[in-house]
Image 1 (cartoon, one colour):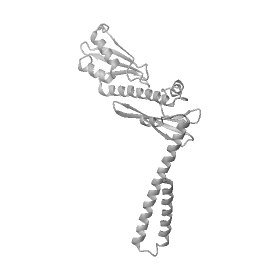
Image 2 (cartoon, rainbow, N blue to C red):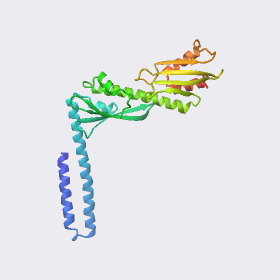
Image 3 (cartoon, helix red, strand yellow):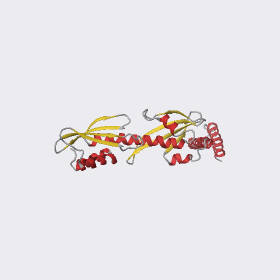
Image 4 (tube, helix red, strand yellow):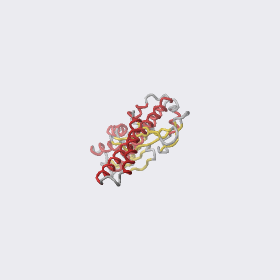
Length: 260
């Protein structure tokens, strides 16, 4: 139906353009301007119809590719947060994976996958320390592309959470010194200060589970004669750091007088 409308618009447009050229000398200036305005309106309508037809064609091709792959829940990709478009490469789809922290959308990563059998990752802008190819093998991407995307998204969001927490520590806690971290933000070593004795405390947070934004292990060491090993309060602080985003945990510790 849309194709017939499109053809009709083109025919009408061609007729008006020819009529405008033939009668330019004979018609009053107002009539010529009227025809030119009509031609411009029809050109805009033609362009809109061309765009709609293109979208329908691309959508049909993507759906066909997904059905051939057995991806029956294609629209769940979009509803689940994965925008997908067909790229200029033959039989390739580009998936966009957005990351967020505390309700704010942050970085968006893209991965282009060839839907020809076997599935192949063509290119992506995912950080090199995220093991994309390993995740593709572990999740059996050939049989379950949704599982691969979910797992990849989990890693990317966890990385974003850790990176954003580190950024907030630097912005909100000027008295806390960041001694060590890495590109994956899977290790964080902080220098804290105990206010009563002005003792330096070495706080290490190990994020060995790369799918989480919270540390799996926290250790706090001190120099001098101060012994924290048997302190119930510092045991609570350790648990707090392990179960709360680090910048929020430090804020609580500072308000309760545990650190400067």
